[in-house]
Image 1 (cartoon, helix red, strand yellow):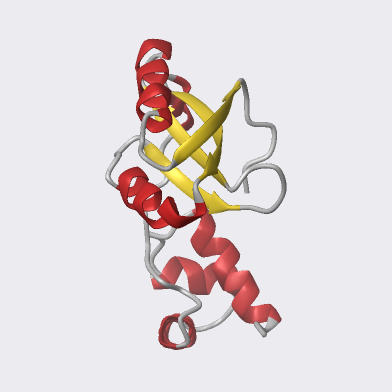
Image 2 (cartoon, helix red, strand yellow):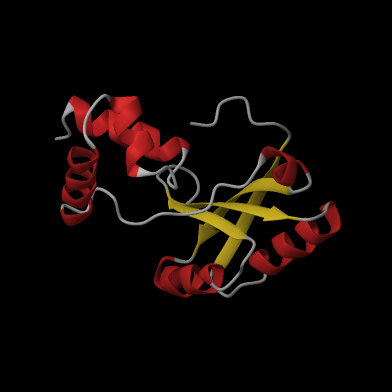
Length: 142
């Protein structure tokens, strides 16, 4: 369970993981050493697993993103996961309950590239069926 102080720190890091400890401390109203020790504790506990890049909205406007729902052969699910992991256009992969087994979030530079990517995913051994939805806009992104 996270404390309120840890949750506040994580919220600031989600906004900007490159913020300095001095900036984080100023915004939280605590010392730099307090911020640094909280970050170290969160990393040691595995709450913070790493840091990444968040792309600008201007860059993302040029990408075509889609959710691709997959039905897979259960015995070949691991093979499908390995195949998807090898595709740089795959942003996220979720296992889900319901009519489909997985949801893949992909991004491509064009509709043509997206079409080829979805065909490639559908042709993977173990993929039985796909259903795709192109993301038109993002209304909330936390």
